[in-house]
Image 1 (tube, helix red, strand yellow):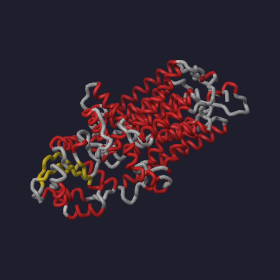
Image 2 (cartoon, helix red, strand yellow; image 1 turned 135 degrees about the horizontal axis):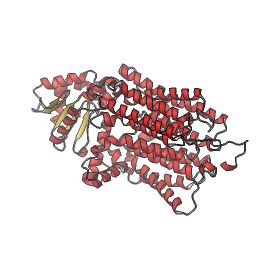
Image 3 (tube, one colour; image 1 turned 30 degrees about the horizontal axis):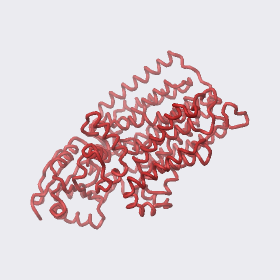
Image 4 (cartoon, one colour; image 1 turned 120 degrees about the horizontal axis):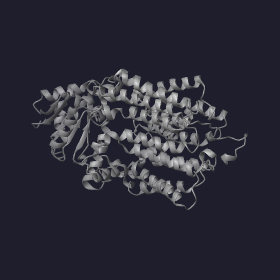
Length: 599
């Protein structure tokens, strides 16, 4: 349908009814000064946060009250700016500031990289820097060697910048990726509405709903950004609509021109990087493009063929060995939606009371956004606004729960991919048309909802940081082990929640106690020192080894209800009292033991 020629009896886009007004300069200046004051207050407050005092609710347990005041002030300022129908800059400033303030807090508040799995991603980059290659048959972290795109890019960045380790910049990933997400989504949403209030409210709801922690230094974050970029290009420049309304002019690309070639090249390159960097994202991308083609939301089919082609080529080419080795597991999970969900949902009977609260808040936050999305969709229907593309792109990821448990994370990944489009629908509850959202009641409800979502994000995203943040002693202990251990050593660890595998990943074998079968773990707990000594003294398999026990490991078993509760202390006491072990390194609540005598 040609948007410019839409009749009163046909569905319209947001741009058909948008009425905007340029901001009064003095009001814009007031908003900028207000925002700067809030940022300064937030920065000063964050500088007073004491990382060593992390409690059961993570980061929020150490934030001064002024931090929450600053975040609330920026949120309220955003709502106030909506009243004037700003054409973009002021609303954008608030959203970009909140993105950095919320998702950048770990970068500024913590001394070291958050999440143990981010450290092992640094280790893969280190491997590529050292060998200029990957090993698809590696025994350590083979999936990353088979989908190395993200790691190869970061190895190139490190080498080009003369950087020894990606650890020096990995902590900035959440800030960078969230800003990239916002850029791609703005490009996409702008194709369907000229109402900046709708666009920036949707982007803010997306940021407030992004609690699943997939913006850190990881292949998923980069692949998700590229997925959003591909969807944005398809919907903006290859949409089945003509984009000829006055507000959206200029989106048509001249066939065969340089602009069309450039846009197409960026999209194809993004598809290649997606296929070579992540296992799940290519499947979702194929499904999403396929849905847009089948339901005639885009007017070209060749991007679907390209995405299928690069995905199949990678799966049956560089990753062929890994795929064939795991095809039985993949087939077993197809269609097993209940089993896939069971592998994702935590057992409330095992976790700590604080973790139960955090889990409940996370579920309520997710349910609230999707509930608002349903109401927003109904509101759009009432005002005859198009929603086909957004419904498709929100529904496709949710269907992935039928395909795989994805290591117990499928529901979180499905939520991540559906969130941007649910956020757009949710924002439509207040701004279904350009004339809507001007009433005081509308602004009050929007402000209240945004404040509640902000509180939910703080709990859901940062509530478990006691097991995901590491102090100087833990980092020093991990570094000691990597330096002192000879190649071929066995590293025994209580859990994987400590700064592990950041370099030399191919040289060591890791044995994680809380991953042992219950019967084997029972034997360890019956005779901790003797059993661990028997493993470490197996000279036919290992050249030596260490046992590392840290405060974050204790926090992990306490929070998640591991089988090791409360036996990590028992294991440590056994090692300290045994003549088979000696303390090789100790600092604060972290200790490294080594074998000094054969059993």
